[in-house]
Figure 1 (cartoon, rainbow, N blue to C red):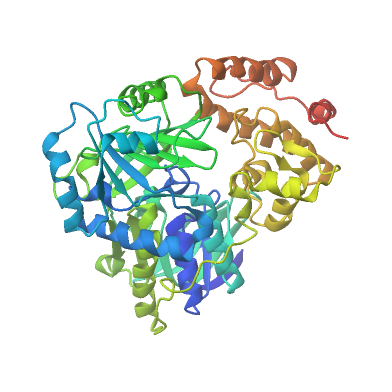
Figure 2 (cartoon, helix red, strand yellow):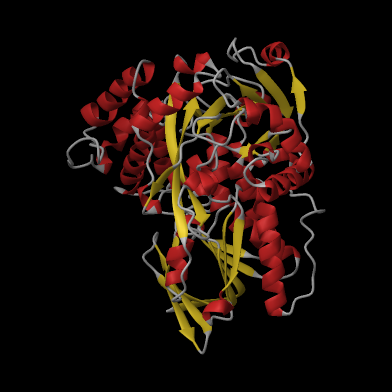
Length: 544
């Protein structure tokens, strides 16, 4: 069995794991990061993309509010390519708690969170979609962040500094001897290969799955799994982040992101992080509640729903997800008699850099490395690995070259063949980070599948191109396409009314009717179409 060696093994490829890889790499510590799926497959890729000013937590968690204020300012300065510095508003409507409204400014002041009272008329002038009857408004320093670009840029910088990563690499066992993790068993879900990793120290940054990893070492972490669902609108509805001016609750944040807006979120306690799914009931509840601050939300078109899991670390008798701290927990498993094992979990996207810094400090102390953290001062370089997640960039690049032979494969988001080729070359068509689906990997690293058609047409076109390039063979591309469409349907199905319902009929006719590709979980299983039918896919994809 092949054995890989590294100084630090990081388990988990979310924002914290990739941020930790960069932090340690900058200190001269070699890392190997393994992720059981792809980058940002957990909460880091299923959030509303809000870079918190801290104002949301001033009443419930002043420490979290201060951390958000400080970390938000650092990220705006050092990772501007990942940030849309929109600013934000907190608005109240009739029926909201008047004591909370009256005390909001002073609560912000206690955590030094910038906050400015403005009149309802000023707020509506800034954001015309706000309700006519808002009774109070405050301006804050919220922003929007692209979590995929953020993690990919962190990972890319770590790789340039000598560290490595493996996607679709699932940890299956921790081998412990004399109070230390001697080896880690990993299964490559792409190739079926089993390999071992020898590391001086292992960091568990698996997010909601951190408890499962810790249990492999006989350690226990008490986590509460809070599933939150969000909705994506077809258009960008506001210029700024809009927050409901009340104690944190469901359906009180609207975050503009590129050409769309993200509305949410809910908080439903579940017993398994793998069971997180958006539901029709949650979608209805989000809209019914949020329309009080923005009536437009009742009639706008939604193109997708999705859900993520917050890993909340329990303390004492806390059991309500809304009342559990959003702070993070750094655990040295020396307490469990395992000297070279550390867990970092909890927290928020906004505080990922701080979480990585504190973890790296502990790791370096245990390794005897004296190099300090520099991620507070060193800018995060933009990378080719993360650049194509930016909304509108692909359209600008295509218009800039004016290459009439550069075919558009995704019309909704204007993603061209040359962009897809660039992503394939960056990932490596046959390398270990291709994952179990090149199509899915391309979608994560670009805007493919994220427009109104939700992959209905671009899935076919990109799959056809993958066959042309030799990236998929025989039935492989067909299975990847089927899985890709099933994942889009998972988010599509909770919001099927109006135009999306008609669009769903078209997709069903295309995939299930004409191509005989039944979708698991929506229709009875049937044989998928054969690879010889790819000639039909190619013609639908508009190939030259």
